Image (tube, rainbow, N blue to C red; front, side):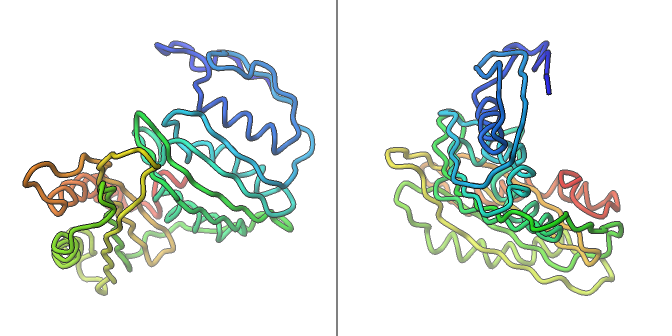
Length: 281
């Protein structure tokens, strides 16, 4: 396979660090020969051979999106014939790429229905520009073919799940912020997302303190919302990461702003009548 004119016309054309790491991971997974494997390269020649299982690692040493590297390597991992582990470093929640929670809560369960068993654990969050995120990915290779699934009817909302996370320097969340968020978000999300006239969906709201890499004191907060449908589809949207509160500000207010940011595209998708999230197609 020869790929030319990579990112042609961009201000900085050619491979960036995260693209190069994706190529290298797939190279290692498929025992491939790879030419043009350097940052800035506008042409790559890739000749795969035999797919293999094993332990692998990636580290672009930037905030390059871990989730995009996962997407590049997912099919070779699925057909590797055994269990593989990948230690992945970079950005877990960065602009213009799927956040970690989309991968864990929407993508992985969906492909799981196709027979691909994937487990992902986020040990550290990583944000732009420093990165530093750490994800351990485990994939059990398929014994046979992918199982087809059909998700072609929207149905009604059956479950709404919101996860509000933050990376406070102290490592602890304020109990009042957590209590207010869990109490106030449930009726609010129900009002915003439930289908009128349909059975009342289950609503879950939880708040989590996430860890940053040692030496990084970056205070961020985000709200990820997942909606499950009776037709079998799921929808996801993420608000954030936003800067943590300063001065007398509260995490409750930041999570509220993050939830508002997530709700707009989520409601727009649900309004279309689509059967599942557009990013899963």
